[in-house]
Image (cartoon, rainbow, N blue to C red):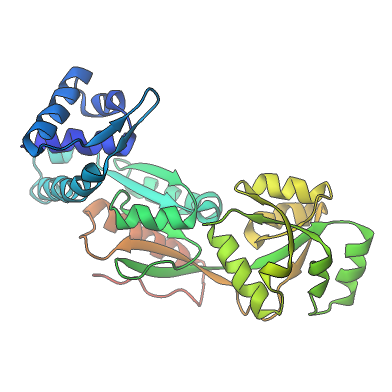
Length: 313
């Protein structure tokens, strides 16, 4: 096997497509297919499961990907450090992020990063927190952003922003009365239809933890829907379908406009940490290190006292 074959394999694995890999590597699709075929013959393994719509890694392919990714990343690092002709081309960073950091925190950091390093290319994969962590473990993303801590064996979590969760309701009279009482008793939630984020969401996990601390068990709630898209949740709450628990960041505009009411969760302290996460078993590329530094600077400038210094490992 050679690095060209492994590079083709990695591109197909990450993009789920032979044609996308060919386009990114400036090769023909038959060439990509030939590289993969040669690898499969040499390793006597089927590396991909193919169907009419997509290409996904087989069990053997998943195992090979972890090694191949390391080799390709090491090659890029050598090229960067020694300034070879190939290394002078645009570099790339893959960022996996859960909904809240992807939509409300990353844009500012990305703008600053692009201004400082215009030759760097960035790929954002927005998914739930559990999948973000899995992408980091499998080394399919360089860095990730997640609203909860799920796995510590392979991952280093760096809290950089505090996000408060709130209970949101329609702006209706009965909730306005509850709001006026300013009570820390949220047992009234037990009499409401509740809409939550999907399983695997950091917001869902933290909501369960904070409500439990406030004396409301998730199993006692009348959960009528689990929805991935938070915009759908907000619109459903506005229309009176039920109440929900979402990030204060995500609901700020609707609350300010008077469409929703927001109730704090008692005993939730300062909220939850939004974390930058990376795989501590792999050396970050120079591009990824630059991006981490920019995130640190952007959110240190904003004066978050709870921000913890990024580790320079």
